[in-house]
Length: 463
Image (cartoon, rainbow, N blue to C red; front, top):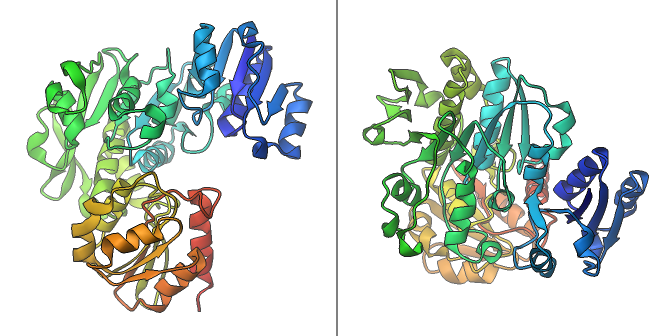
């Protein structure tokens, strides 16, 4: 088979390697010349994978039997349109890897605008601590294609799934799917909020009545889907339905919302309700993660773990010992009574809303970076009530300053380093220095991990 792989990032390279290992003829095309380097081309040459950088050749597209598109390749890209015109199937790396699994592992797929990584990492931790063989893959960092050859029947795959990855699945099916929440994001890729939602909903498109779909029924959009009140979603036209064949489990912070199986809280405890009984799993006070949103993440992981028949005591011990996810409300240091929190993964306004809501007050907030027309007005009340000092940096610093300077003391930093040092210098015992940028990192950094690592390095160097 002749296979075209678009994109030389982590997932594209992984898919190309997998395709070559299966005996296919592979051609990798990458329009960004800057991604070409000696290490990458050396790998491709060693594997005898043909490639090009700095362009997408269109002349011979019809010779390909299949295209595997990397997550970052938008639907309106010229090469995608050309492939569609040539009637060549286009799938995601997740779908390609799934089609090449020779074993039958249990699969948990997790999506949502926010909370995917924490939920996936927590669930993998619970499963591992209970003695199960688990692999954490997907959008969390390791492509599924990287582990295809290692997967055995008794493994459990925990797969974090972005809307990009789900948009081009065909046969991928998870035994348990988790849909955490949905807010406006990635609209430049999907074109509209509706298309974004429909891409996310594909997580359950191939599920059967033997599978489970876990839904956050406190989320406005997801609640409308559950209650078949589709017309209340103002961006969905024609009252179209969102169907699933899977059993539905709900998670909610209100026990009253749990009319079927799922997870909630009652009398200060995390409660799991099955079709037969209701069980108290653990005290909410023993959940080590900050914020209400992390209760949703924990409930979802608990429901999935219970469905996979993990014992209550194993769930309780694992949740209690969980250290969280790097760059997501990560405690960096407590110095002279000041907590330094790295939330660099908060690359959108909604994520930062959750972060600000996770602390009582006295927040020294670092925000900024590059933006996609962010609307900061939704943060106004939280900022007025909880933030004592806002330090603005990056391309968005002037917009942030203009938005909040009339409500809270603000500072315009010339660099991220200056912003971090300013926060440290003007905080005192009882304060929380919170890096939660609400913006992407590409103005000054390679990615949000790079930004978070620099923040941690500076904070840990403070005397």
